[in-house]
Structures are given as structure tokens and as C-alpha cells.
Picture: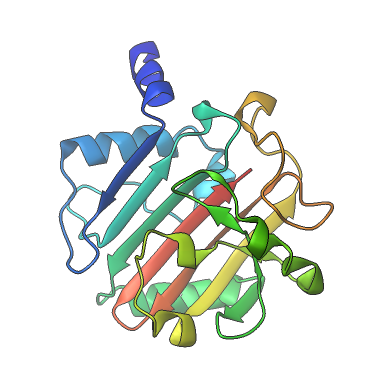
Length: 203
């Protein structure tokens, strides 16, 4: 187990993306997902698939909280299938808020590739302080086509201020959100045509 944690500490950012088509995760993807999933409190991951073996995916980005200093996250996109309509109905009942990306939203102005706050985006957030934060989908490595930002429905299951990981796993200077959101998390799902988007972000 220590060997695995050491590996995750070194390779804290794992990226797999096949944006235009679905793929089956390989053994490395499966192991990385399960190990990283277990590093987060179960209360934050209950909306995520427990396993991804045999699951069609369109996008998978993982960040281990063991890295510390940076925002930690799980981003996953799967094709919409026969079970998705039931999932959508369940999520709609549990959601704390429902957002449309074409409207004003409190987005986390984070550049996931460079692992830093996008200052030009953060200055827009103070006007939306009454809202709960959601990911910056535009920074998901070009994962989504332009219509996604006009048509996707975002179901925010929960977002809270505070420390939900050990201190050495948290960001050192926040993620560019308004005062009070120096640490916290956001989690939920978004639905767009033939895709289901899952996220968890902790900072």
C-alpha cells in the first residue's frame, strides 16, 4: 500500500482522454481510479461510480490529494445510456442547485493543466457570491464542444466551505473564489445530449 501511495504522490496527475469517442479503461486506469477515489472522504464520492472496469468512458482526469498545494479533483465523462435517465431523475431530486452554463455561475477559475488560478477569470466571480461554486468546464482540456456551454444542465449536489482533507492535502492559496471559499469542495453531475459528466473538486 505504501508503494502505491508513493507512486500516487509522484504521479499525482493522471490524464486519459479520448474526447471524440468512448473507450474502455485499461488496468492502469482502473487501479488509479480506485486508489485515488479511496483517498477522498466517502461522503464526497458517493455520487461517483465505485468502479470503472467495463464502463465506457469519454474522458477521465484524476488528481491525487496526496500531491498537496493544488486543487484535487476527479473528472469523468461517460456516454448517456439506458440507466442515465433514471440517474438524472435521482440527481434532480437531490441537487442543491441546478445551473445552466449560459447563465451567470460561480465558476472555479482554475487552470487544471498549469495547476494555477486564472486571475483574469477570478475577477468576474465577486458578482456571483450568492451562488455555489462549480468547475471551470472550459478548462477541461477542450473536452466539450461549444454547444455544451449553451445546453448542458448542471446539477450541483453539494458545495461547502471548510477543510475536508488533511491540511497538507489542501491548496496553499485558494482557487480564486470569493472570500470565505479559501477551502472547500464542490461535487455534482451535468447532463448534455449523449454524455454524463461527473465531478468532485476539493481545495
